Amino acid sequence: MLNKKKLIPVSLLTGYLGSGKTTLLNQVLSNQKGYKVAVIVNDIGEVNIDASLIQKGGNVTQKDENLVPLSNGCICCTLKVDLMKQIISLAQSKKFDYILIEASGICEPGPIAGSICMLDGTDETVNLPAVAYLDNITTVVDAKRMADEFGCGDALLNENMDEEDIENLLVQQIEYCTTIVLNKTDLVTDEEKKNVISVIKALQPKAKIIETTYGNVDVDDILSTGRFDYEKILESAGWIQAMQGEGENSEDHDEHEEHHHEHDHEHEEHEEHEHHGHHHHHHHHDEGEAEEYGIGTFVYQNVKPFSKQKFEEFVFAKWPKEVIRAKGLFWIADDPQTAYIFEQSGKQKTATDDGKWIAAFPEYERKQILQMNPDIAQAWHPVYGDRVNKLVFIGRNMDKDAIIKALDDCITDEAK
Image (cartoon, rainbow, N blue to C red):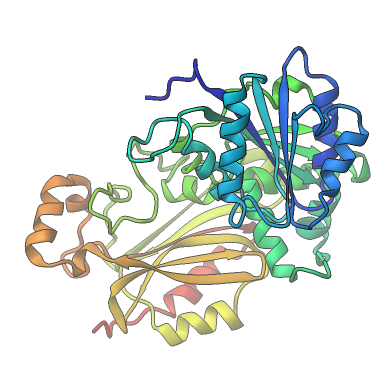
């Protein structure tokens, strides 16, 4: 149980390069409303430019020890330990009542959130002092960049990153947050802005969206919001909501994340498989707005395996350009033991080994798991067990029937 009374709250600020994070940070620090805020600024270069800009704004200074620059690395990976040390130090100094972290523009928010949550005292296996808790994750989104990328189709170009890496990072930053600041709305038309918001809501339907220019936001929307919940954020992304059938086919189950082959996992929804081995359903997160701008979500499901060759051909040669985001589980006939996670953001597509299906476990262990998890037992297929291809698609003006047919064409009966 998280006891917040003795812990210092932490707010994480993320967003791609040039989105306006530092401008927003300075706006917040100029209107602190009595908060004593310490700031940690991460920059991947040897010189922390953002820290210099914040000092120039006259809000915090390194001399007063309330500005901590973390340079030459990312706090989501190489500087993770340094970040935790600085949070502990600031919290134990008793000089501050809030910590605000500005992550580098190329940081993934998930690992950073995990590091901060290790300091809240809820995990007794972690030998770290309980000093802080994560209160809010704010992602700053450049409305103009989003309009160009998802609205007009123009490529995002950066000399240091591939286009597909940028698209993937933007999606991750939007999916893993509790507050979205849509910045630079003065640079897009009302139609483009509504278009962008429809995409954001499809990717992350649970976050609060704040529209602004020049990073102008109310402090209360960034600090002491109480919005972050570790369990809820893991299930808040649009693809997970669709996987769970929230909306048309909503049912109340726990643990619908994809790692359903693990021992303690509750299986996916209780719906029965149709006689031909698969079913599909379709729903929108924000019905009126989503329909108006062509944003749709659907789940493809089929218990029979993919042919590795045919699925790879679909993914790398026939992938529909209208798909913005796709994620889910699949299995292939050549390797029936292994559950794979497929993930796509923009042009980037990956498939990773996620361990064994429960059906591949030794019989005694499998029986034990099924006895302990009636949901899994109820959904168990008499031939394939818990093996399933279950993929969520989010996109604009998708030809759902064509995608389903293309995936059905990848199915084979030749499982080993």
